Length: 90
Image (tube, rainbow, N blue to C red; front, side, top):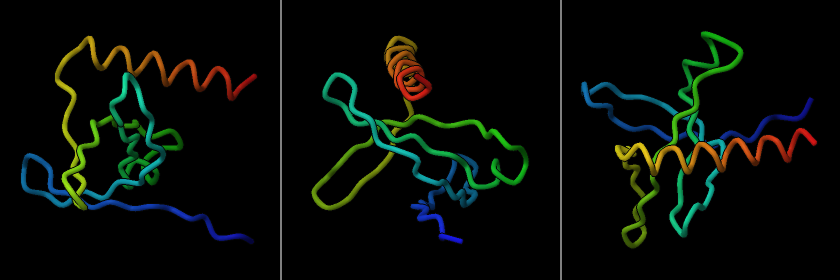
């Protein structure tokens, strides 16, 4: 059986806890990159975990993730992701 190549990312949440995410994909919307992240514990808790979308910020060789606080920006990204899912299903 082939081994799945997961890209895992560890970060610290707002409460100071270490959280591990699987990087599912990086998408570009309006020339801004966004990371689609799945918390690793979500895969254990349920078959379909909740995917987080965060803005990807590059500073030299370093990468960081920013929360998307603007509803309009988030809705644009969600719409784009839904369109991608529809295309994949077809």
